[in-house]
Image 1 (cartoon, rainbow, N blue to C red):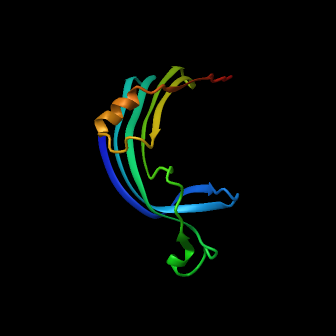
Image 2 (image 1 turned 60 degrees about the horizontal axis):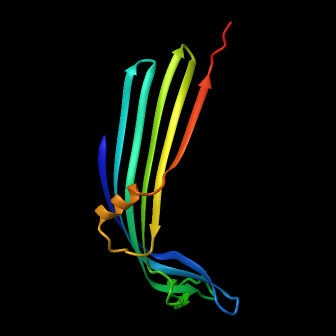
Image 3 (image 1 turned 90 degrees about the vertical axis):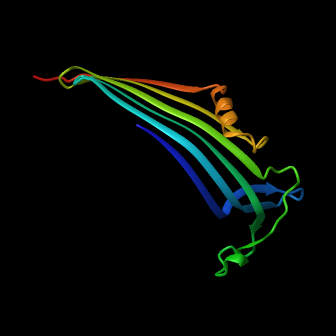
Length: 166
């Protein structure tokens, strides 16, 4: 099956950063976050024989977020009034207020039952990711194109089970 996804979310108290100023004081900062995620999922299950199956799942997605209203915890972070939990904070001008994450995740599994109760699994997990604070307004087609240019993380697993009976 194939499915497409689109999600917009808002979080008014998203953790932003723990910033240590020149005096050595840590500022625990939070911000308002507007985030949009576009994704696609593909799943294929194929049974060649009752003893041999193949499964595949893949999901590329791109998520773009923008931070605003950056503030830090006040001296009363558990105050009953929400507004009293924070105080204004202006981080250094070099701090990024926008980001874009692109990821591709895929799994493939082959299962072979070579004799009753005895099974061989071969698994491949594939992943690519990219996090950027530059070019946040780049088109999603360019984001996916850039994602496929990334170096992948591949993991292979082989599991062998043998049924011993009397």
